[in-house]
Image (cartoon, rainbow, N blue to C red; front, top):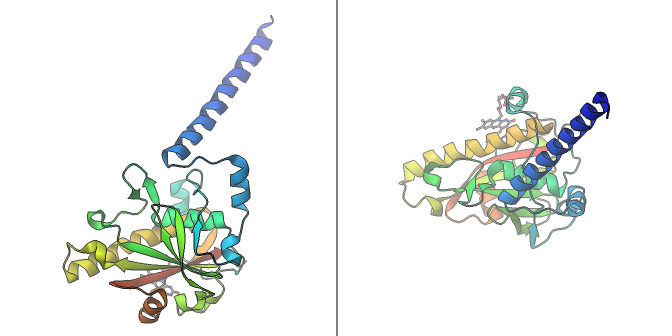
Length: 245
Ligand SMILES: Cc1cc2nc3c(=O)[nH]c(=O)nc-3n(C[C@H](O)[C@H](O)[C@H](O)COP(=O)(O)O)c2cc1C
């Protein structure tokens, strides 16, 4: 056999091995997080907009996409507040990915989260304001459950851009989960921990060219009533959407 042909065949074989290893490692990573996606199913979920259109008592979120994205240094370079939020809907997959980035489970064996929390209290809860209703995010089950049907997005913050944003995340602390702390420590650590969650969303948005703005200019009392918050406090809101060009 001529030498050139042999080298070519060896290169092809090496390429096949590299592709095989990459596919296998992606699959392993997904399975580590309890995800066993069937590819046709994933395609369907990536383009579904069920949350945009109907309110459901509960909703199993599509598996979050835990690979890919921009290199971290580039995401940090691009991280910014952008108040030009378009009303274009986000898919169920995007909503799942944003919630996972915010405070999802990234170590399934111990239920640890993408955001750190003091003494691992995991006290920051995310209320998801969508056109179809307000939901609460259950990170452990990758699941949303309905708090209130209907469009309450305008009430998630006082800035005008809340009315257009397809998604507003409302961060609230659950004081039940901080029972070992006194009042002052509860306020201090929850205010600290919510910052990590918000920054995770900022970095996700930078990586995926979405607009976001964390907001303290909100009516905490009225939101707390709307979501039926008991033994907790509304901290910040953060709308997310495509960039209005
Ligand atoms: C705790 C906090 C509360 C904020 N509240 C609001 C707000 O209510 N409305 C608003 O338009 N921007 C708000 N911002 C966004 C800041 O104005 C913005 O982060 C700042 O101007 C710096 O811009 P950058 O995020 O692009 O670096 C808030 C930021 C933080 C950290």
